[in-house]
Image 1 (cartoon, helix red, strand yellow):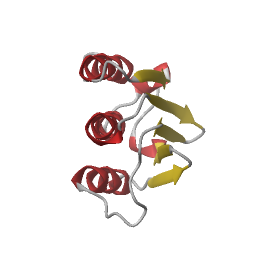
Image 2 (tube, one colour):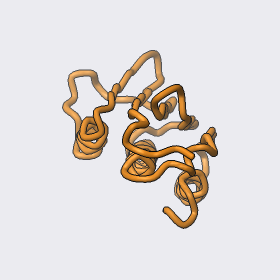
Image 3 (cartoon, rainbow, N blue to C red):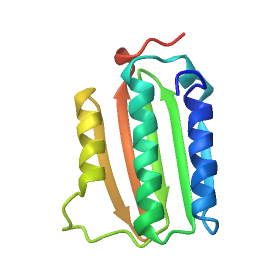
Amino acid sequence: MQELGLEESIQILLRNAQAQGPNIRFAASIDPRLNDIDGLLPQTTYRIVQECVTNVLRHARATRIDISAAIAGEEVAIEISDDGIGFASESAFGRGLTGMSERVRALNGTFELLRDRGTTLVRCRLPLEHGAAG
């Protein structure tokens, strides 16, 4: 991933996912400034996107997934939403969601899983202090 940069790595991930889910529309907005960050931030960002895409392919029966990752102020803001079937609010996190939450917490970030009217949204915020921009 470091050789390609985060932006290109995510685009490759999405091209592979598109082959697995040809009926899903993938839309991604990846801030090119994320390529200038090093350390655990880009790896964590990639793993969050990867896990969300995997969950959508395996479970969601979605027709659309929207991915956004950008530098917003002093943090990396990641949002991944889909229009799939979601899951019951009383359901416990599986290993993938638990792993994402733990990765984010390890970097003093925030992790939210929101479900509303046919949309599932994963929202993460990671402080930039864990990676040097520029």
